[in-house]
Image (cartoon, rainbow, N blue to C red; front, side, top):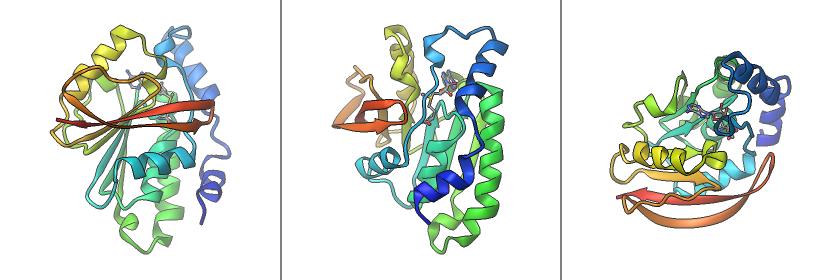
Length: 202
Ligand SMILES: C[S@@+](CC[C@H](N)C(=O)[O-])C[C@H]1O[C@@H](n2cnc3c(N)ncnc32)[C@H](O)[C@@H]1O
């Protein structure tokens, strides 16, 4: 099965942008740039996995996981131990849980290698309160529209990762000696061209 077929089977009826809009209205934050919604592409997730050297035993954590596209594509493309998403808006979290159930039922039993055992975890909550100490790869697509104050908060949060953790920020780079820069690459998100900034927690 290709990731494009996987996308059609699992996400065709999942309206992430509308769910995000509803969720932001419900908490009166419809104009908050920090909650800007956007989706990754399977190609970009493949690129992230390659740039971070993802493999068996890795625990990937997507900070601000939306409907779970990055979490699911990563679990499908690499033999991770666990793929975790943390999302603030219940409307998106509920959709992600539904997609994760579909993945476990319809896709995972067909897999014949280590990907069959990859655990999926969708957590509802604020990424700044989340325990990410078991992650070995952390991705933040959500920081694309963060301002400088939010980037500093994210950087402080990422400092709680264990040494060796690979970190990918989309669009905005980190500015702290706690992170060793590994690479910078152009990528294609659902919303347009972006930059992947890859680091290792020192
Ligand atoms: C650009 S979308 C990325 C969705 C998904 N990671 C992807 O790549 O397809 C960013 C998501 O982060 C969520 N988000 C923003 N701030 C957050 C926070 N403090 N805690 C948890 N989720 C947050 C937003 O609601 C949104 O769904």
